Image: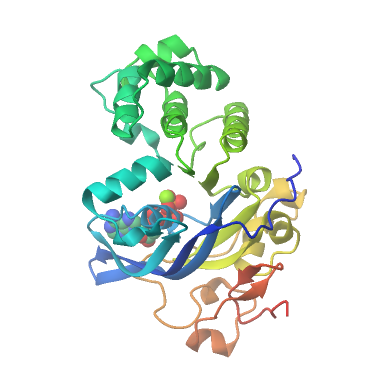
Length: 334
Ligand SMILES: Nc1ncnc2c1ncn2[C@@H]1O[C@H](COP(=O)(O)OP(=O)(O)OP(=O)(O)O)[C@@H](O)[C@H]1O
Ligand SMILES: [Mg+2]
């Protein structure tokens, strides 16, 4: 596994997410998918969001861009961007313009974001225009170069309709759509799940190169600790709508503090280095209707469970130098 440059610690300005609470409508009323999330997504590095299915990763990315739609609602919180302000206060045309300048987003299952009736090249031009890029020839040249770098026949991809492409090709096209915009913040939601290992490696390599070339702030959402280990300088671990641990990736992987992070790591033979030692996390994560309304949301699966965990939700404490952990069972760094 490739070593990570020691760039995780940085005081660079960040997208500051504060007290972010997002609700979805369920059969039991409006319930939180994110609760009081506090997180700094630092500029110029790759941050991984990791957690099991349903932990709130996509919701957090959408809320960062203020694109939560019904049946969801942002109940409270702020997403502060330096020199921009609170993204959650932007609406309508102002929000659309902000998206154009700031965010490139690759949707999970990116095929859904493509128009079935238009060729890929023409959709790229539409997208560029809607984001204020007027040089169509440049857009197509950039797209071709990216397609080529991702191991695809560039001419074929640009003249194809979505149904003519395989799932893996569509996923790579989704990534090209986001990269072409030259946004400042690139968010990739499960960018490589439909790809075989070799294509995954190639695509991640290109994302990393573009991240450096364009000086981006990048977020990679994944279930895969291996992707985090290879790509991300910092990692935020989500569980049941909470950030339970955050810090520089090397530190978090070397010495995970939260029992959930430890469980995630021990579930992976690639990381533990031994198939025998790899153990799946017992139990399964709660859904919105079964998340405990008080106490620690992880306690039912936790080897460190204590009486206080049933009553009091743990506050975040400092860990890994400039990171955090939220667990009654671990002591703070200082
Ligand atoms: N439109 C919606 N309506 C109701 N509940 C929703 C909606 N979207 C997400 N949820 C719920 O919110 C929680 C967080 O979902 P989210 O999609 O953010 O998780 P995720 O971590 O991205 O999961 P995955 O890894 O499966 O993509 C889940 O319990 C999910 O069922
Ligand atoms: Mg998701």
